[in-house]
Amino acid sequence: MTTSPSLPSGYAFHSGTLPSVPEYRHLRAASGLTPMTEAQSVAVPKGTWFGCHITSDSNENQAVAMGRIISDGAWYFVVADMAVLPEHQRKGLGDAILKHMLAYIKENAPEGEPYVTLSADPPGRRLYLRNGFVESAPKEVGMMLLDGWRDNL
Image 1 (cartoon, rainbow, N blue to C red):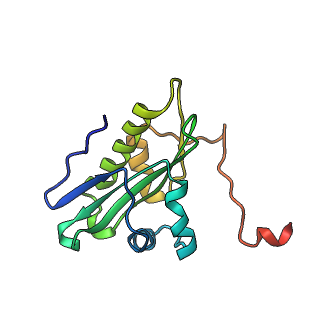
Image 2 (cartoon, one colour):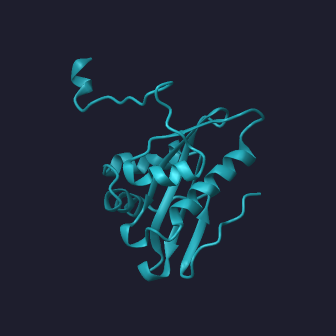
Image 3 (cartoon, one colour):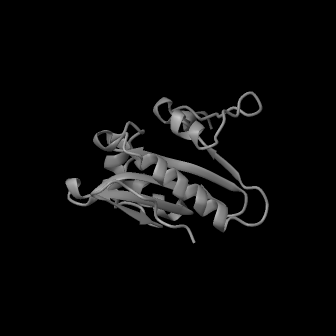
């Protein structure tokens, strides 16, 4: 069973749960991730295979860090929504979340090598490299639809 990681004093780890919708939205926006609408945020738990977050005594026990995995539970495992509030960065919180989620995949994915991916923004690249991720190009290149794509259908 995946154990909760060791954290600095004043922090609490919550395994298997996501922050509340308002906390989730705040974490995304304040940490530099693309903001989500209320409707998008409400749907997040339904599409989450596993998630965890960290709360802080200094933030009135509100979420200060989070991560989740989107998955089919068999082969595809996408690390998503890795976020740490700026004032809580550089304390090992992101590393604790990522390691915990990777251990959860290791323990709960079916037999065989899982396909674990993520999209790394510049501030997170060092964290991911330290934890065994490598850039997938030129073998694979991440792609996305641009705003307005629905108008072209």
